[in-house]
Image 1 (cartoon, rainbow, N blue to C red):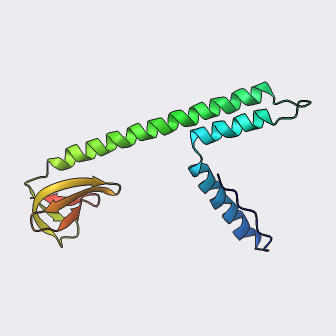
Image 2: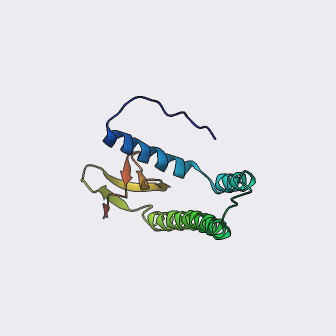
Length: 138
């Protein structure tokens, strides 16, 4: 994990707080479940023996780690289900004639693929139609 030193450049308070919020969001999204456990273990190893970590605080942190891990797994499963459902629905369009939502592209569907932005139909004439924005089937 790389830590960058804070620069002493003076900035307006609004941009500093928005930059800090963006940095915190990026850091939160880039830390994994294992990174959090590593940080927790380092915290426990390096705690002051005269003021040890409160056991209830440690249990609370472990419960949070467990919740985050389960949420990540749930999101992964839901994404898989949504992709499978989208592909299943989109495959029914193969062989059908469709027109894009703006009416500029029309043709018979040769194949369908599901991308991160939604289903895309490839027509027999080589054109593609995004199904995420809607399309009409003739």
